[in-house]
Image 1 (tube, helix red, strand yellow):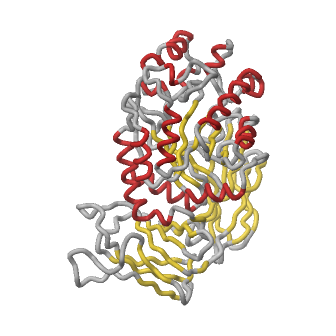
Image 2: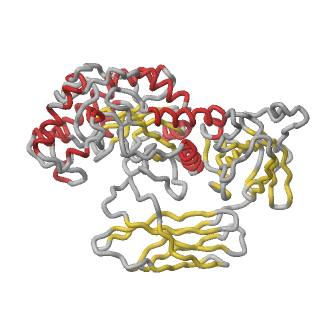
Length: 512
């Protein structure tokens, strides 16, 4: 990112971690509302009671930072990011900059300091979220509450900038070494102060790409981080919540790592200071999967392709070891042999195969069965034969991916390449650069209306435009449906190879 002072070796350290815990928590967790944003467009009476009355009742007496750190460690997380101050301006730390802070509540404890110490003691790298927006400051200075407009940003409000700088200085000098900083808003000036105070700090949002609530269609260059909720909300939502399953969250973690990114998975503690049981359950399910398969997540980089259909890949950094992560569209039963055919991997005379978590020697209660994994190379196809032989659930119906480890292998193909090009009105274009060794491929486009979304959050579904068959590289064009005035759209190209699907970069159209 332009102007970033993130150090290359620290970004590599960050990429190796792979999986982190995001914690969205503030005084409005008592209400179960959206964190901070309920203040925008609210009546004067609502905001007066928000800043004057909510601190009087915020008493999360069940808060146990060691328990949170233990749960994150079980889940296989290696770093955490906590909302020290969200847009509402309420400081979850002891500060001299504002009376609107945690020390003025019945709890009267420096939550941020306790969390930094607890997670550090658990071997989890501590990090902070900080919002340059500050609705409390805007209220004190008679300004309309808003976000993402110049009139309320620190760059146009010297008093707010000084307020933010003082808070960032407090946060980065009082709690020992803070390893990561997530600046959710205009970062200029704040990130420079962070790097001045600690040259080794990794500024995530504000320093690298941090897609929110979505996973990019293509691997991004260098370090990046996708941040994601378990349900529909960042903070605690006591009603009308719809959680993703543990299997869905594990699948997302796999996809993010296969594309070279980190996953920052969020929890929202309630007003009593507890992690809701639904969130604990999902962390524990992920924890079991990570206990078996952590090796394919930690310290890995993308393979030559992200996946072949439901078989996803990561590669151990600086080695020829590839992990084949088998997503279970149909449950892989305990004791069942499976043959997997791959085109993107070739064996060598030194290739070895194993299943993570298994010894490949014993299937419980069946002494005559030897679940030894094998492979064979048949022309351009590598065929793996493996059995799921480890019982993780009493009923044997473990629904989550099995991981096959292949050591000393080499690439079997070069992936097709496509480049999303520009547009002329509603005519969009792409350049097919390489077919990936196939006789023909299909090139198509997808688009979505992103009007009203910010730069980091996107709709959940793309709309497809029918594709065309290509037998050689060249220009491909398609026509978008009628575009509505005043709307903003994104589009991307994709190529369907016989073995896999590859996306081009995303481009934007703004309709006057």
